[in-house]
Image (tube, rainbow, N blue to C red; front, top):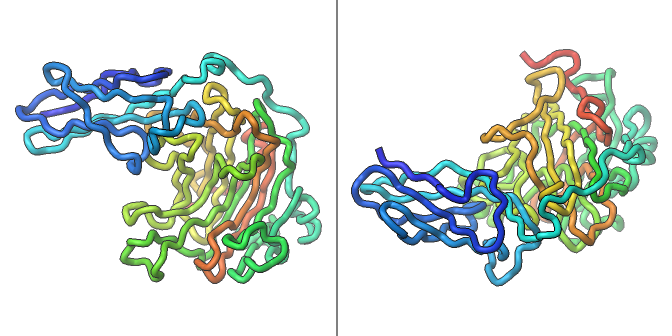
Length: 383
């Protein structure tokens, strides 16, 4: 049986400059169309040139953006690499390997100082009135559409915020832009280079939480893409840049799964072929999330762990990637970044949905996963 393998670079390697991605094909007779894929499918594939008996090479300039080779890469990052070839008329694919670029020589081998700082500890207060909850946040955009109520699942055992934002909110004076509709409740803006912390929250999409559609989806009821709905982000200045970390629902192609929240790569982390986190909506049920984060502008120092519970357990559990890793290298800050915060959101493009409703509770920043766990299933896992 024919097979294809990425010989170099080795998995986990630190690579810089122009790198020879070497491929070997085994088995079969006629080999055609040997290509290399780095990062998401939108970046396309690159033809590999033959170098000898069943071996091929593609030379990857790691200093440039794959999406636009005329533009320098903004930061070192984690990239996933695979290759494929047509052997006797059948396409075979290589297993993915992960490498990290290391072109910023000042950062190679360095570790940002920091760790946990007591001033990072923060929690929104859901125990009393809506006004009390609003006052416990650093800022709230769209507070008029939020109300603290009894938990729709746990009842009087816990309180949660129900947020229901109409499209007409785009005209409200507290909305930052005219092209989006936003609810946003924010933690204190004091997260900086080297900080290590856990941010926890629980969210519940109700039965009418909308599906999203790409433009060319035959099930799309509109003549335009519905865009995204973001529910959480890690964000801070410079504000002209997009969020380095956002949990949202968005389908870019009809092949993308329906009714899933995900965390995708972005400009600072462009090397993911698929979202590294995907969660089904689970309408009417709580999803508990704890992100353990080390915030850094260096891929050598920055990382994210994800701990989840959608009713499988009484507490959040670590989520491992397909290659077994729990800790995902991430660039979450820029060298010029100011202090960051965490936001609970309903953030979407204006004019796409008449109304979007979401429940959330347990938004806090703590030192440990256990302290940050929202505990929605503390009385028992779902049967």
